[in-house]
Image 1 (cartoon, one colour):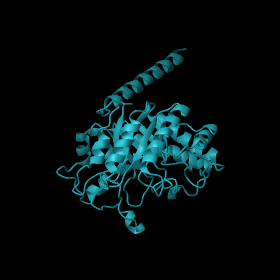
Image 2: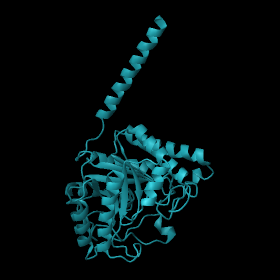
Image 3: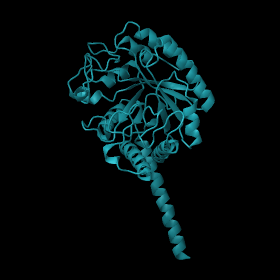
Image 4: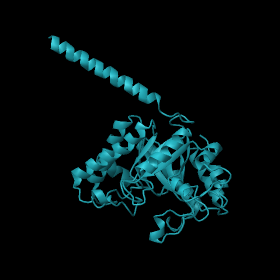
Length: 358
């Protein structure tokens, strides 16, 4: 009896210590300028540290993140690769930028690619270190990588508001094991990866919003969401990419058609799946005479939609022909959809985005 009481007291003491630790940890979280769940006016700034390393400047302000914060930006999106050869956008680089964003009072979205390089509808390459894994081992790798990334943030007192389980995954992730399409594919495996990432994220941050992200905001993909749900896939929010001026990507449609179709699709997704939608990526051509009009039209449309959660411009800070180290051996040119002027100042496009309100 006495031993039983002692065990009960020990258990009670342990619960008290854990509760106290949780309170202490929660208390050290950085405070954001905008409440969780409010309209996000953000930017993906994942290239920022590499640009600074290369000596790129931003007008009269050496700190691009502070420059945008001063304009009213309230959220930052950061990608993380498993192990890219250059070191940029790996966990340590993401953590460096996340600490800066948190100190600047920014809300944070973490975009986990589950790849050593860009993951998108045409590339979902298994990380080199995971190449020989079978499905159960790959599931565990997804879990451990998600935990590793989010615990690293938690240990720094950083509490991200959103996390993407995969980047632009309409065709699945971790190919060929998790590759899918409209009519067939490894749906059980892909949904399993997503759900494993979902559960791991909630294990670290129970209130984090988990996003499943696809491209082409204008494209109706009922089949994707129906298949995901049928195979047990879990998500809290739908993320979309929208590049309305890329007519070559969008079947030759005009930007007006792109914006209109995207608006219709966002409304449909919210209605059909009873969850909010985030524009996780948007971009227009740098310094194009119509870019400001395109962005203003799109902002007007989406800010009028209940349960549209906000918008993130993809790498707006790129200017002056800069390109990342990984582009050079591939023979790729510089990113041409930044939203800064040649002298390193935010363009009218960025002003339109940050002036958006909900």
